[in-house]
Image: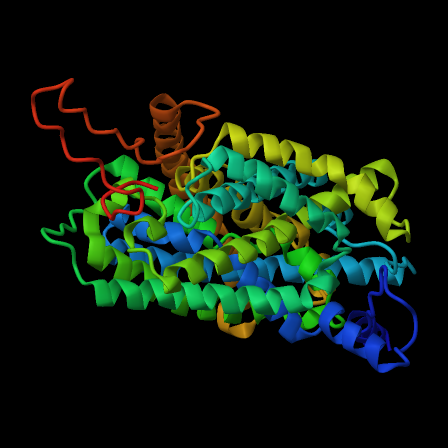
Length: 491
Protein backbone atom coordinates (compact mmCIF):
# COMPACT_ATOMS: atom_id res chain seq x y z
CA UNK A 1 0.00 0.00 0.00
CA UNK A 2 2.85 2.34 0.87
CA UNK A 3 4.49 1.58 -2.46
CA UNK A 4 1.30 2.45 -4.30
CA UNK A 5 1.17 5.81 -2.54
CA UNK A 6 4.76 6.59 -3.53
CA UNK A 7 4.11 5.79 -7.16
CA UNK A 8 0.93 7.84 -7.13
CA UNK A 9 2.75 10.78 -5.61
CA UNK A 10 5.40 10.76 -8.29
CA UNK A 11 2.93 10.40 -11.15
CA UNK A 12 0.71 13.32 -10.26
CA UNK A 13 1.56 16.93 -10.88
CA UNK A 14 -0.36 19.38 -12.98
CA UNK A 15 1.70 22.46 -12.30
CA UNK A 16 -0.49 25.40 -13.14
CA UNK A 17 1.35 28.42 -11.82
CA UNK A 18 0.00 31.54 -13.55
CA UNK A 19 -2.43 29.46 -15.64
CA UNK A 20 -6.20 29.59 -15.80
CA UNK A 21 -8.08 26.74 -14.19
CA UNK A 22 -10.21 24.55 -16.40
CA UNK A 23 -10.14 23.71 -20.07
CA UNK A 24 -10.29 26.49 -22.66
CA UNK A 25 -13.77 26.91 -24.06
CA UNK A 26 -13.31 28.68 -27.38
CA UNK A 27 -10.99 28.18 -30.35
CA UNK A 28 -8.91 31.27 -29.58
CA UNK A 29 -8.18 30.04 -26.06
CA UNK A 30 -7.32 26.58 -27.34
CA UNK A 31 -4.94 28.01 -29.95
CA UNK A 32 -3.32 30.20 -27.29
CA UNK A 33 -2.84 27.19 -25.04
CA UNK A 34 -1.36 25.19 -27.92
CA UNK A 35 1.32 27.85 -28.49
CA UNK A 36 1.77 29.12 -24.95
CA UNK A 37 1.29 26.33 -22.40
CA UNK A 38 3.73 23.44 -22.68
CA UNK A 39 4.29 20.61 -20.24
CA UNK A 40 4.79 17.44 -22.26
CA UNK A 41 7.94 15.36 -22.68
CA UNK A 42 8.23 16.82 -26.20
CA UNK A 43 8.21 20.35 -24.79
CA UNK A 44 10.98 19.38 -22.37
CA UNK A 45 13.02 17.86 -25.20
CA UNK A 46 12.71 21.00 -27.32
CA UNK A 47 13.62 23.15 -24.32
CA UNK A 48 16.73 21.09 -23.52
CA UNK A 49 17.95 20.84 -27.11
CA UNK A 50 17.22 24.49 -27.89
CA UNK A 51 18.88 25.74 -24.71
CA UNK A 52 21.93 23.50 -25.03
CA UNK A 53 23.13 24.65 -28.45
CA UNK A 54 22.95 28.42 -28.74
CA UNK A 55 25.69 30.92 -29.55
CA UNK A 56 28.29 28.30 -28.57
CA UNK A 57 27.61 26.75 -31.99
CA UNK A 58 29.58 29.66 -33.45
CA UNK A 59 32.57 29.24 -31.11
CA UNK A 60 33.06 25.48 -31.42
CA UNK A 61 35.15 25.82 -34.64
CA UNK A 62 37.36 28.20 -32.62
CA UNK A 63 37.70 25.46 -29.99
CA UNK A 64 38.59 22.92 -32.69
CA UNK A 65 41.45 25.17 -33.82
CA UNK A 66 42.75 25.14 -30.25
CA UNK A 67 42.26 21.40 -29.71
CA UNK A 68 42.79 19.89 -33.14
CA UNK A 69 40.20 17.83 -35.03
CA UNK A 70 40.54 14.55 -33.12
CA UNK A 71 40.51 16.06 -29.63
CA UNK A 72 37.62 18.35 -30.57
CA UNK A 73 35.46 15.42 -31.64
CA UNK A 74 36.43 13.28 -28.64
CA UNK A 75 35.74 16.05 -26.12
CA UNK A 76 32.31 16.71 -27.63
CA UNK A 77 31.33 13.07 -27.33
CA UNK A 78 32.82 12.75 -23.84
CA UNK A 79 31.29 15.87 -22.31
CA UNK A 80 28.00 15.19 -24.06
CA UNK A 81 27.70 11.87 -22.22
CA UNK A 82 29.01 13.37 -18.97
CA UNK A 83 26.48 16.19 -19.13
CA UNK A 84 23.64 13.75 -19.82
CA UNK A 85 24.63 11.71 -16.78
CA UNK A 86 24.64 14.66 -14.36
CA UNK A 87 21.34 15.90 -15.84
CA UNK A 88 19.94 12.46 -14.98
CA UNK A 89 21.23 12.83 -11.41
CA UNK A 90 19.56 16.23 -11.08
CA UNK A 91 16.27 14.77 -12.32
CA UNK A 92 16.46 11.95 -9.75
CA UNK A 93 17.12 14.40 -6.92
CA UNK A 94 14.21 16.60 -8.06
CA UNK A 95 11.75 13.68 -8.04
CA UNK A 96 13.08 12.59 -4.63
CA UNK A 97 12.63 16.07 -3.19
CA UNK A 98 9.18 16.61 -4.68
CA UNK A 99 7.95 13.24 -3.51
CA UNK A 100 9.07 13.88 0.07
CA UNK A 101 7.41 17.29 0.09
CA UNK A 102 4.14 16.03 -1.39
CA UNK A 103 4.00 13.38 1.34
CA UNK A 104 4.02 16.35 3.72
CA UNK A 105 1.08 17.84 1.77
CA UNK A 106 3.14 20.75 0.41
CA UNK A 107 1.37 22.49 -2.50
CA UNK A 108 3.55 23.77 -5.35
CA UNK A 109 0.68 25.15 -7.41
CA UNK A 110 1.99 28.72 -7.38
CA UNK A 111 5.62 27.92 -6.64
CA UNK A 112 8.39 26.90 -9.05
CA UNK A 113 10.88 24.48 -7.49
CA UNK A 114 14.51 25.37 -8.12
CA UNK A 115 17.81 23.54 -7.73
CA UNK A 116 18.89 25.32 -4.54
CA UNK A 117 15.56 24.36 -2.92
CA UNK A 118 16.13 20.72 -3.85
CA UNK A 119 19.55 20.87 -2.18
CA UNK A 120 18.04 22.58 0.86
CA UNK A 121 15.28 19.99 1.25
CA UNK A 122 17.59 17.01 0.82
CA UNK A 123 20.88 18.15 2.36
CA UNK A 124 20.39 21.36 4.32
CA UNK A 125 21.18 25.06 4.23
CA UNK A 126 24.92 24.77 3.57
CA UNK A 127 24.30 22.89 0.35
CA UNK A 128 21.52 25.32 -0.52
CA UNK A 129 23.80 28.33 -0.16
CA UNK A 130 26.60 26.80 -2.22
CA UNK A 131 24.20 25.66 -4.93
CA UNK A 132 22.45 29.03 -5.01
CA UNK A 133 25.73 30.95 -5.32
CA UNK A 134 27.10 28.83 -8.17
CA UNK A 135 23.79 28.47 -10.01
CA UNK A 136 22.90 32.15 -9.94
CA UNK A 137 26.40 33.27 -10.92
CA UNK A 138 26.48 30.82 -13.82
CA UNK A 139 23.04 31.85 -15.07
CA UNK A 140 24.00 35.51 -14.69
CA UNK A 141 27.06 35.10 -16.91
CA UNK A 142 25.15 32.77 -19.21
CA UNK A 143 22.76 35.65 -19.85
CA UNK A 144 25.73 38.00 -20.30
CA UNK A 145 27.18 35.68 -22.95
CA UNK A 146 23.91 35.70 -24.92
CA UNK A 147 23.90 39.49 -24.90
CA UNK A 148 27.53 39.63 -26.07
CA UNK A 149 26.73 37.13 -28.82
CA UNK A 150 23.84 39.29 -30.07
CA UNK A 151 26.16 42.27 -30.52
CA UNK A 152 28.88 40.13 -32.11
CA UNK A 153 26.49 38.59 -34.65
CA UNK A 154 24.52 41.66 -35.71
CA UNK A 155 27.82 43.38 -36.54
CA UNK A 156 28.17 41.09 -39.57
CA UNK A 157 24.96 42.46 -41.04
CA UNK A 158 25.27 46.09 -39.97
CA UNK A 159 28.69 47.45 -39.00
CA UNK A 160 27.54 51.07 -38.95
CA UNK A 161 27.26 50.74 -35.18
CA UNK A 162 29.98 49.36 -32.94
CA UNK A 163 29.38 46.26 -30.84
CA UNK A 164 28.99 48.19 -27.59
CA UNK A 165 26.12 50.20 -29.06
CA UNK A 166 24.50 46.99 -30.30
CA UNK A 167 24.85 45.63 -26.75
CA UNK A 168 22.86 48.60 -25.43
CA UNK A 169 20.13 47.95 -28.00
CA UNK A 170 19.86 44.20 -27.48
CA UNK A 171 19.99 44.62 -23.72
CA UNK A 172 16.76 46.61 -23.97
CA UNK A 173 15.25 43.99 -26.30
CA UNK A 174 16.16 41.08 -24.03
CA UNK A 175 14.64 42.87 -21.04
CA UNK A 176 11.23 42.03 -22.52
CA UNK A 177 11.73 38.42 -21.32
CA UNK A 178 10.43 39.63 -17.95
CA UNK A 179 6.95 39.15 -19.41
CA UNK A 180 7.37 35.40 -19.95
CA UNK A 181 5.96 33.85 -16.75
CA UNK A 182 7.68 30.43 -16.63
CA UNK A 183 9.11 27.57 -18.64
CA UNK A 184 5.55 26.46 -19.43
CA UNK A 185 5.38 29.41 -21.77
CA UNK A 186 8.40 28.61 -23.93
CA UNK A 187 6.61 25.95 -26.00
CA UNK A 188 6.61 27.75 -29.37
CA UNK A 189 9.90 29.55 -28.60
CA UNK A 190 11.74 26.30 -27.87
CA UNK A 191 10.50 24.75 -31.09
CA UNK A 192 11.45 27.78 -33.19
CA UNK A 193 14.79 28.07 -31.41
CA UNK A 194 15.77 24.55 -32.34
CA UNK A 195 14.72 25.10 -35.96
CA UNK A 196 16.91 28.20 -36.05
CA UNK A 197 20.01 26.51 -34.66
CA UNK A 198 19.48 23.54 -36.96
CA UNK A 199 19.47 25.87 -39.96
CA UNK A 200 22.57 27.70 -38.72
CA UNK A 201 24.51 24.51 -38.04
CA UNK A 202 23.85 23.09 -41.47
CA UNK A 203 24.51 26.46 -43.09
CA UNK A 204 27.97 26.49 -41.46
CA UNK A 205 28.58 22.91 -42.60
CA UNK A 206 27.45 23.29 -46.21
CA UNK A 207 28.88 26.79 -46.70
CA UNK A 208 32.30 25.68 -45.42
CA UNK A 209 32.36 22.60 -47.66
CA UNK A 210 31.31 24.64 -50.71
CA UNK A 211 33.85 27.33 -49.89
CA UNK A 212 36.62 24.77 -49.73
CA UNK A 213 39.93 25.09 -47.94
CA UNK A 214 41.59 28.50 -48.01
CA UNK A 215 44.93 28.73 -49.73
CA UNK A 216 47.74 27.45 -47.54
CA UNK A 217 45.38 26.24 -44.84
CA UNK A 218 47.10 24.78 -41.78
CA UNK A 219 45.66 22.54 -39.06
CA UNK A 220 48.43 22.75 -36.49
CA UNK A 221 46.35 22.45 -33.31
CA UNK A 222 47.03 21.72 -30.56
CA UNK A 223 50.07 23.97 -30.31
CA UNK A 224 49.88 25.38 -26.77
CA UNK A 225 48.65 23.75 -23.59
CA UNK A 226 46.86 26.97 -22.61
CA UNK A 227 44.85 26.96 -25.82
CA UNK A 228 44.21 23.23 -25.54
CA UNK A 229 42.51 23.43 -22.15
CA UNK A 230 40.75 26.67 -23.11
CA UNK A 231 39.12 24.86 -26.02
CA UNK A 232 38.27 21.86 -23.83
CA UNK A 233 36.49 24.03 -21.25
CA UNK A 234 34.43 25.72 -23.98
CA UNK A 235 33.11 22.27 -24.86
CA UNK A 236 32.55 21.61 -21.15
CA UNK A 237 30.45 24.77 -21.18
CA UNK A 238 28.61 23.64 -24.34
CA UNK A 239 27.22 20.51 -22.70
CA UNK A 240 26.69 22.13 -19.31
CA UNK A 241 23.43 23.83 -20.19
CA UNK A 242 21.41 21.85 -17.67
CA UNK A 243 21.53 24.48 -14.94
CA UNK A 244 17.83 24.99 -15.70
CA UNK A 245 16.97 21.27 -15.56
CA UNK A 246 14.87 21.59 -12.40
CA UNK A 247 12.82 24.47 -13.78
CA UNK A 248 12.20 22.56 -17.03
CA UNK A 249 11.15 19.46 -15.07
CA UNK A 250 8.83 21.49 -12.89
CA UNK A 251 7.09 22.72 -16.06
CA UNK A 252 6.34 19.11 -17.06
CA UNK A 253 3.05 17.41 -16.31
CA UNK A 254 4.92 14.18 -15.50
CA UNK A 255 8.51 15.05 -14.54
CA UNK A 256 9.53 11.42 -14.01
CA UNK A 257 9.60 11.12 -17.81
CA UNK A 258 12.56 13.47 -17.93
CA UNK A 259 15.19 10.80 -17.20
CA UNK A 260 16.27 10.14 -20.79
CA UNK A 261 15.17 13.45 -22.33
CA UNK A 262 18.46 15.27 -21.83
CA UNK A 263 20.42 12.37 -23.35
CA UNK A 264 18.14 12.35 -26.40
CA UNK A 265 18.51 16.11 -26.70
CA UNK A 266 22.31 15.78 -26.49
CA UNK A 267 22.37 13.15 -29.23
CA UNK A 268 20.47 15.50 -31.52
CA UNK A 269 22.72 18.42 -30.61
CA UNK A 270 25.78 16.35 -31.54
CA UNK A 271 24.38 15.99 -35.07
CA UNK A 272 24.59 19.80 -35.27
CA UNK A 273 27.82 20.59 -33.44
CA UNK A 274 30.11 17.88 -34.83
CA UNK A 275 29.57 18.44 -38.58
CA UNK A 276 29.54 22.24 -38.35
CA UNK A 277 32.66 22.58 -36.16
CA UNK A 278 34.59 19.99 -38.18
CA UNK A 279 33.64 21.52 -41.54
CA UNK A 280 34.53 25.09 -40.58
CA UNK A 281 37.84 23.97 -39.06
CA UNK A 282 38.61 21.89 -42.17
CA UNK A 283 38.03 24.90 -44.41
CA UNK A 284 39.82 27.61 -42.43
CA UNK A 285 42.20 25.82 -40.07
CA UNK A 286 44.43 28.02 -37.92
CA UNK A 287 42.71 31.21 -39.10
CA UNK A 288 40.07 30.39 -36.49
CA UNK A 289 42.54 31.07 -33.68
CA UNK A 290 41.93 34.79 -34.29
CA UNK A 291 38.26 34.48 -35.24
CA UNK A 292 36.16 33.26 -32.32
CA UNK A 293 32.92 33.76 -34.28
CA UNK A 294 32.58 31.38 -37.25
CA UNK A 295 30.44 33.90 -39.16
CA UNK A 296 33.47 36.17 -39.58
CA UNK A 297 35.21 33.81 -41.99
CA UNK A 298 32.35 33.01 -44.31
CA UNK A 299 31.60 35.41 -47.17
CA UNK A 300 28.49 37.52 -46.85
CA UNK A 301 25.48 36.08 -48.63
CA UNK A 302 21.69 35.94 -48.16
CA UNK A 303 22.13 32.52 -46.52
CA UNK A 304 24.64 33.88 -44.03
CA UNK A 305 22.49 36.91 -43.26
CA UNK A 306 19.55 34.57 -42.63
CA UNK A 307 21.68 32.48 -40.26
CA UNK A 308 22.77 35.62 -38.39
CA UNK A 309 19.17 36.82 -38.01
CA UNK A 310 17.95 33.42 -36.84
CA UNK A 311 20.77 33.20 -34.29
CA UNK A 312 19.87 36.65 -32.99
CA UNK A 313 16.30 35.54 -32.39
CA UNK A 314 17.51 32.33 -30.80
CA UNK A 315 19.87 34.22 -28.49
CA UNK A 316 16.90 36.25 -27.31
CA UNK A 317 15.15 32.96 -26.47
CA UNK A 318 18.23 31.54 -24.74
CA UNK A 319 18.61 34.76 -22.76
CA UNK A 320 15.13 34.10 -21.43
CA UNK A 321 16.04 30.51 -20.58
CA UNK A 322 19.09 31.60 -18.58
CA UNK A 323 17.44 34.60 -16.95
CA UNK A 324 14.06 33.14 -15.98
CA UNK A 325 15.48 31.14 -13.02
CA UNK A 326 17.15 34.36 -11.85
CA UNK A 327 13.78 36.08 -12.06
CA UNK A 328 12.31 33.34 -9.85
CA UNK A 329 15.09 33.71 -7.25
CA UNK A 330 14.63 37.48 -7.17
CA UNK A 331 10.83 37.15 -6.87
CA UNK A 332 11.22 34.81 -3.91
CA UNK A 333 13.72 37.17 -2.27
CA UNK A 334 11.32 40.13 -2.44
CA UNK A 335 8.14 38.15 -1.79
CA UNK A 336 6.62 38.50 -5.27
CA UNK A 337 6.90 34.92 -6.51
CA UNK A 338 3.30 33.91 -5.76
CA UNK A 339 1.81 37.15 -7.06
CA UNK A 340 -0.77 36.39 -9.76
CA UNK A 341 -0.37 39.72 -11.55
CA UNK A 342 1.94 39.27 -14.54
CA UNK A 343 2.58 43.00 -14.84
CA UNK A 344 3.64 43.35 -11.21
CA UNK A 345 5.98 40.37 -11.51
CA UNK A 346 7.45 41.75 -14.74
CA UNK A 347 8.13 45.12 -13.10
CA UNK A 348 9.72 43.38 -10.12
CA UNK A 349 12.02 41.38 -12.44
CA UNK A 350 13.54 44.35 -14.27
CA UNK A 351 16.38 44.99 -11.76
CA UNK A 352 17.80 41.55 -12.63
CA UNK A 353 18.56 42.67 -16.20
CA UNK A 354 20.63 45.72 -15.20
CA UNK A 355 23.78 43.91 -13.92
CA UNK A 356 23.65 41.58 -16.94
CA UNK A 357 23.62 44.57 -19.25
CA UNK A 358 26.52 46.17 -17.36
CA UNK A 359 28.69 43.04 -17.33
CA UNK A 360 28.18 42.51 -21.07
CA UNK A 361 29.60 45.98 -21.66
CA UNK A 362 32.57 45.41 -19.33
CA UNK A 363 33.58 41.97 -20.69
CA UNK A 364 32.62 41.80 -24.40
CA UNK A 365 35.06 38.95 -25.07
CA UNK A 366 32.95 36.64 -27.22
CA UNK A 367 34.55 33.18 -27.12
CA UNK A 368 37.09 33.46 -24.28
CA UNK A 369 34.37 34.29 -21.75
CA UNK A 370 32.65 30.97 -22.55
CA UNK A 371 35.70 28.99 -21.47
CA UNK A 372 36.14 31.04 -18.30
CA UNK A 373 32.51 30.54 -17.27
CA UNK A 374 32.79 26.86 -18.17
CA UNK A 375 35.82 26.17 -16.00
CA UNK A 376 34.97 28.28 -12.95
CA UNK A 377 31.17 27.96 -12.80
CA UNK A 378 29.80 25.18 -15.02
CA UNK A 379 32.30 22.68 -13.60
CA UNK A 380 30.74 23.02 -10.14
CA UNK A 381 27.16 23.99 -10.97
CA UNK A 382 26.19 21.11 -13.25
CA UNK A 383 28.91 18.50 -12.78
CA UNK A 384 30.57 18.41 -9.35
CA UNK A 385 27.72 19.58 -7.09
CA UNK A 386 25.02 17.26 -8.57
CA UNK A 387 27.36 14.24 -8.37
CA UNK A 388 28.29 14.97 -4.76
CA UNK A 389 24.70 15.82 -3.80
CA UNK A 390 23.50 12.48 -5.14
CA UNK A 391 26.13 10.56 -3.16
CA UNK A 392 25.41 12.40 0.09
CA UNK A 393 21.62 12.16 -0.34
CA UNK A 394 21.73 8.37 -0.61
CA UNK A 395 24.75 7.63 1.58
CA UNK A 396 22.66 5.83 4.24
CA UNK A 397 21.19 2.40 3.65
CA UNK A 398 17.74 3.68 4.70
CA UNK A 399 17.86 6.43 2.06
CA UNK A 400 18.87 3.96 -0.61
CA UNK A 401 16.18 1.52 0.46
CA UNK A 402 13.44 4.19 0.29
CA UNK A 403 14.71 5.94 -2.84
CA UNK A 404 11.95 6.82 -5.28
CA UNK A 405 14.23 6.31 -8.28
CA UNK A 406 16.91 3.65 -7.95
CA UNK A 407 19.98 3.45 -10.22
CA UNK A 408 19.55 1.43 -13.41
CA UNK A 409 20.87 -2.11 -13.53
CA UNK A 410 23.12 -1.43 -16.52
CA UNK A 411 25.00 1.15 -14.43
CA UNK A 412 25.79 -1.39 -11.72
CA UNK A 413 23.09 -0.17 -9.34
CA UNK A 414 24.39 1.82 -6.35
CA UNK A 415 28.03 0.73 -6.56
CA UNK A 416 28.32 1.55 -10.23
CA UNK A 417 26.58 4.90 -9.76
CA UNK A 418 28.90 5.91 -6.93
CA UNK A 419 31.95 4.93 -8.98
CA UNK A 420 30.68 6.96 -11.93
CA UNK A 421 29.95 9.97 -9.72
CA UNK A 422 33.39 9.78 -8.13
CA UNK A 423 34.95 9.79 -11.59
CA UNK A 424 32.89 12.85 -12.60
CA UNK A 425 33.97 14.77 -9.51
CA UNK A 426 37.68 13.94 -9.85
CA UNK A 427 37.85 14.49 -13.63
CA UNK A 428 35.98 17.79 -13.69
CA UNK A 429 37.78 19.08 -10.59
CA UNK A 430 41.24 18.37 -12.02
CA UNK A 431 40.77 18.79 -15.77
CA UNK A 432 37.79 21.14 -15.98
CA UNK A 433 38.33 23.41 -12.99
CA UNK A 434 42.08 22.95 -12.45
CA UNK A 435 43.75 22.92 -15.85
CA UNK A 436 40.75 24.48 -17.57
CA UNK A 437 40.50 27.27 -15.02
CA UNK A 438 44.19 28.09 -15.32
CA UNK A 439 44.08 28.11 -19.12
CA UNK A 440 40.83 30.03 -19.55
CA UNK A 441 41.66 32.68 -16.95
CA UNK A 442 45.11 33.14 -18.55
CA UNK A 443 43.45 33.62 -21.94
CA UNK A 444 40.78 35.90 -20.46
CA UNK A 445 43.41 38.13 -18.81
CA UNK A 446 45.24 38.25 -22.15
CA UNK A 447 42.05 39.58 -23.78
CA UNK A 448 41.78 42.29 -21.11
CA UNK A 449 45.45 43.26 -21.59
CA UNK A 450 45.02 43.35 -25.37
CA UNK A 451 41.64 45.05 -25.74
CA UNK A 452 40.93 46.49 -22.30
CA UNK A 453 37.70 46.55 -20.29
CA UNK A 454 34.71 48.36 -21.80
CA UNK A 455 36.26 47.94 -25.25
CA UNK A 456 34.06 49.60 -27.83
CA UNK A 457 34.29 46.96 -30.55
CA UNK A 458 35.96 43.67 -29.57
CA UNK A 459 37.99 42.09 -32.40
CA UNK A 460 36.60 44.56 -34.94
CA UNK A 461 38.78 45.34 -37.97
CA UNK A 462 40.64 48.67 -37.88
CA UNK A 463 38.91 51.61 -39.59
CA UNK A 464 39.59 52.09 -43.28
CA UNK A 465 42.29 54.71 -43.95
CA UNK A 466 41.56 57.23 -46.67
CA UNK A 467 44.26 57.26 -49.41
CA UNK A 468 46.67 60.20 -49.37
CA UNK A 469 46.07 62.99 -51.89
CA UNK A 470 48.65 63.12 -54.71
CA UNK A 471 49.65 66.75 -54.11
CA UNK A 472 50.28 66.05 -50.42
CA UNK A 473 52.27 62.90 -50.86
CA UNK A 474 54.39 62.10 -53.89
CA UNK A 475 54.49 58.42 -53.15
CA UNK A 476 51.72 56.09 -54.21
CA UNK A 477 48.99 55.68 -51.65
CA UNK A 478 48.75 52.25 -50.08
CA UNK A 479 45.75 50.14 -51.03
CA UNK A 480 42.76 50.57 -48.72
CA UNK A 481 42.20 48.06 -46.00
CA UNK A 482 39.79 45.25 -46.71
CA UNK A 483 36.10 45.63 -46.02
CA UNK A 484 35.10 44.35 -42.57
CA UNK A 485 33.46 41.34 -44.18
CA UNK A 486 36.71 40.20 -45.78
CA UNK A 487 37.61 36.68 -44.70
CA UNK A 488 40.93 37.61 -43.18
CA UNK A 489 39.53 39.93 -40.54
CA UNK A 490 38.58 39.19 -36.97
CA UNK A 491 35.03 39.54 -35.79
